[in-house]
Length: 626
Ligand SMILES: Cc1cc2nc3c(=O)[nH]c(=O)nc-3n(C[C@H](O)[C@H](O)[C@H](O)COP(=O)(O)OP(=O)(O)OC[C@H]3O[C@@H](n4cnc5c(N)ncnc54)[C@H](O)[C@@H]3O)c2cc1C
Image 1 (tube, helix red, strand yellow):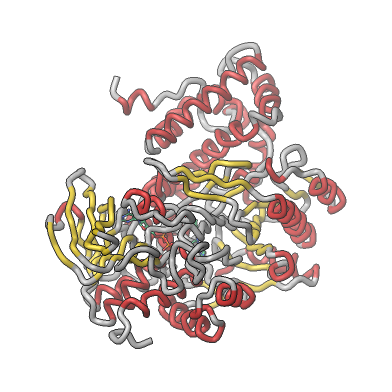
Image 2 (image 1 turned 90 degrees about the vertical axis):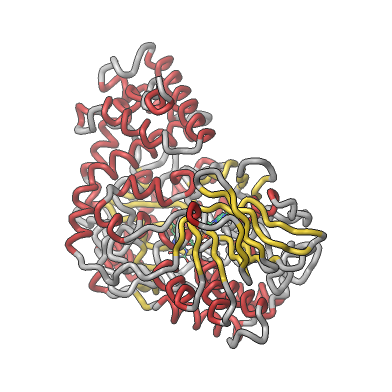
């Protein structure tokens, strides 16, 4: 049996499919779903794949024991009882939830695929794919030279490339992922786009208490390919903290404001127009307004967005101006070149002086680019890994200081149709608790399947919720967090994060705030996501659920890792100096989410790009005019 076919069967998975999404209640044929899930799991890196298989086997064995027999052969009622019972055992809850999340993702995406593709094609493209100077790694010569090599083409790397190429430098960007084009976003199934666009096929997890799902983009454009297009400057208090405590002079609000002006003009940022917002956003606006809470449509870099709600799997209209559409074309026009499908294995240095990079092509062969300037912009989880591999993580804080801006979601059931996925994915921001509690609430409607974890229960109960999915409005909240995590030194990335007590308490409070908004907007029920109190029908019941919630049992995701090579003037505390130079080396800079000294307390792309421009301006002084 080949590895591919053996991976197509996960022992016990069929029974779990039948228990979680029973065919008798309208769920998909269990054998088909189990096969499809196994196919998706087969795309994971080996360690994650084996981890999921083991986890599914364990949940299945527990269900077998609880049912005293095979789930696949049990009656629908026995299956439901067994799965509910094991999900209520604290040690098994996260595992059962992980299986449920993947089943819902696969089933939801597949069943909504035709509708989403039809909607994608009903809306014209806002712009064609731009001209970029892209060469696949397999066609790149084995020995070349550049004035500057940039590792990673995401938010940070792209804007550095634009700034330095604009100053006349010969810039080569090396990108591990491939280039994606709008045609495939208009024609391919969402789940296939999802597993292609994200690192580890979307299965990256920060391990800790609780585990946190941590999706990270990989491709030309980095995570901006899949981000929601929300553009928010960090609060002035954060800018001042970065200036005063970290010693970053360009974070002085006056200077930082100008850097943000530049970034926002490049990204074409404007508030999401009301006519494309969609009912999810409007419901949240109405709820916040009824409570007298400050809320407004989000400023986004998506001119021409028609509300396809697919930012997270590649915008089918090329409307969301990720850096692949907005920044890299300018860089390439000024001569920057991008090598794709090429992973920088090591930065080469001799006696602390940077000499170049060694890069691995997709076929396993290698090439070198010699240079005396390398800008590392591989993202907050991969930048420390590259420093470890290169033997350049000599500062003890490399990989530490990881903040995630953890998020939880709440949903509300309404009498009328919301059809949350018809409209802008992330549409409205509620500011009420931002300054005071560092809680940022955003109306966030994911494509079907991707946000279904908010739907409570298993079996017929879950199927009932899925049937009413178009009556559900969704919100997410993120809390500005302590640096409670780290990227652990080792051959493979291992991300560890343990939610601090205070952050956990604020996440729980955020659930209460979001529930209130939904009730104020007219929700009949609120899905809190709190194990044991997942559905509440009144604000009083909501308060009770919130009062008894254990933060370490929440379902958390995070989209904003930062801080793992923090920049600042204190040489003990920050591995990167206040100009973005890696301490201890000449010719190495860091310019991505890693350098943020603390959680920015907002969606971070504007912060990252503004800081990266600040770093770039220091790389070629005299050649760059700001
Ligand atoms: C689903 C989702 C939604 C989001 N929505 C928003 C939003 O609406 N607004 C917002 O402000 N932020 C949002 N974010 C976060 C934001 O997009 C990221 O914080 C930002 O893109 C990070 O920028 P970066 O430059 O640090 O890394 P990335 O943008 O992740 O770029 C890093 C690049 O480096 C490449 N790379 C890594 N290692 C190597 C290597 N060794 N060799 C070569 N290349 C390498 C990667 O493939 C990647 O392309 C979202 C994130 C996610 C996951």
